[in-house]
Length: 127
Image (cartoon, rainbow, N blue to C red; front, side, top):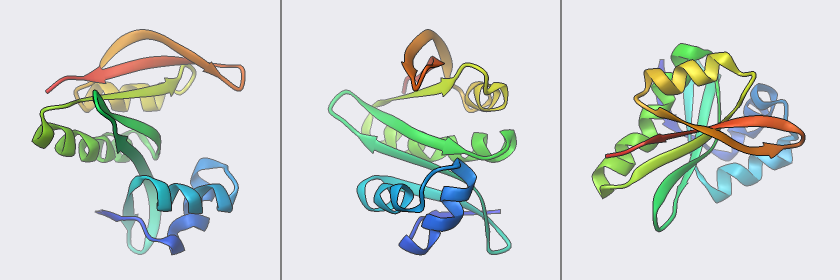
């Protein structure tokens, strides 16, 4: 598995992974740092993130537990170089992604905000 920067041509496969509109994913590729897990020319996961003043924020990630854990190292690597923390939210019922966050060194910090009626759990990884 190779992890690489996303390009516009990735929008459609990323949309399929995230169950989101292709245009939304195209905008994500343009507006955020997006890394793609590529297995033999097929996108099997992705992570998007951006840096703010206080922390690096993971805005979205998808993939099975192993792939997601590997992808969450990407914003962590950037944050470590800048001496920043990394924060992310995971839907409470996504046990696989919650486990991936823990495997990647994040600590659960309690309930996060609701998105489209879904409960979330907040995670943070400090440098």
